[in-house]
Amino acid sequence: MKDYHINIFYSEEDEAYIADIPDLKYCSAHGETPEEALREVLLAKEGWLASARDSGKPIPEPRYRPAIYQVA
Image (tube, rainbow, N blue to C red; front, side, top):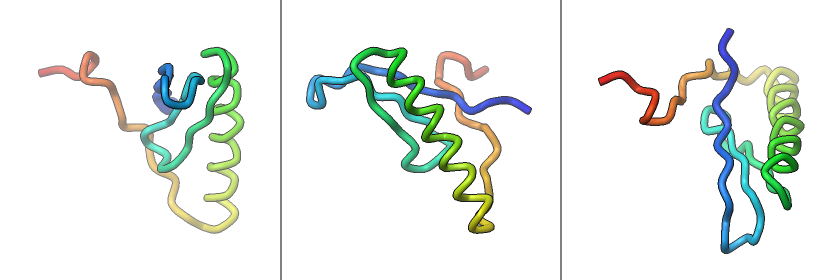
């Protein structure tokens, strides 16, 4: 199984690095460094997946790929 794509970027507004997983609605985290944001979003992902499993909600397949990786 492929894993979920994670975006990491710096937000001037939040003055922090933001990490999000586009395939998992509202799954995001922040940190003072890109590494911290990544650690936090991986924890958020595990919580997101556990919550979906516990409540019987569907878990989406990893599909999102940035435009630079899409074949024309």
